[in-house]
Length: 432
Image (tube, rainbow, N blue to C red):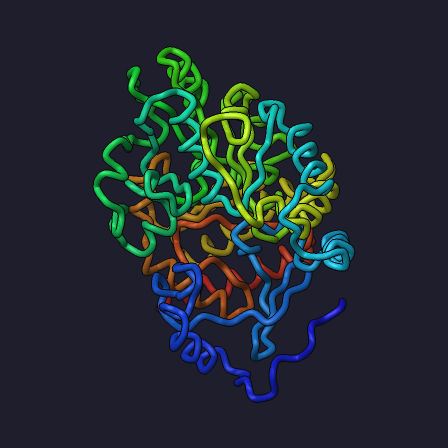
């Protein structure tokens, strides 16, 4: 594996020292709030490099990584197909401010795999994708109201922060902090897994087809189909937020798995191969409302960036039906070993599986079906388990509402090692 030059000689090789130094120049020491370990306590580890299923911190400690860049990495860290594609792309330049063949090829790859995406617009993040989808839905329909579901998380978009999932729930922040009341005045928040009654003021319903920001909560039978029918009844758009599920659950994402066709879909994470990216895809007539063809503005200096599109094409090229079958099997294995480990220590926990996604719920209750139920997870127990696993060399997300992500780098041996570590960690967590 080709490595970057070593860190500067005067840089401390200590997580604690480096994090303290980060806090002097970066608010909270982090550039994404959950990374600060506020929900679980303690000091974050700082990753220096990664390979396959592992990340290595600045102190040289190796962790089996179940964060996988919150789902953006699916092949394993530093996968040769991605790194070689990146090296080749970087040799030709990193940004042009002009159209490229690479963005065309990635858009074609998305459209070919997701039939609802007749047209695709690339951008820089999942948040930008959902923000653009809000503007597009309002511009196309001429309506203002947006419907979202309690516990779904659609990125840091003002109109969609009236309620949130993992990040907002974990930090205990009000969903509208820093957001003017006017920004969410036309946002209606309703319970997940219940089809709401809409009216002709609704521009769009935004939904995570599989809720992956409050643990992992599957759609109830008929829920997605009911949303499709209700949107059709009042002329609203159905928007699937597949930033997590897109190309994670399978070739066609959640909509392919459940057989429900949305009007618009937002993407991120996997389609960038680990680089910053986002996309909106959907019906041709809606998508062509975007500028320069239509009246809804969208632009971005780095949209369709040649490095991100090269990495994304490389990642999608590796995700064959056989790869997804392998990923589903490993997700099931992970859930099984974690369930057995916690049961052996008497630690009440469940690890629900939806396709390739594994959730977490700590406490004696049933597997959640909505956010109110998900919020009953025992966060203190999770924090104890999190730190015990970290001490065993297994990195989970530092928040109780996240998914666990397996990738092609997590071999059977790695899953077995996670199970052995979890058995010891569960016992420690229960003693604590």
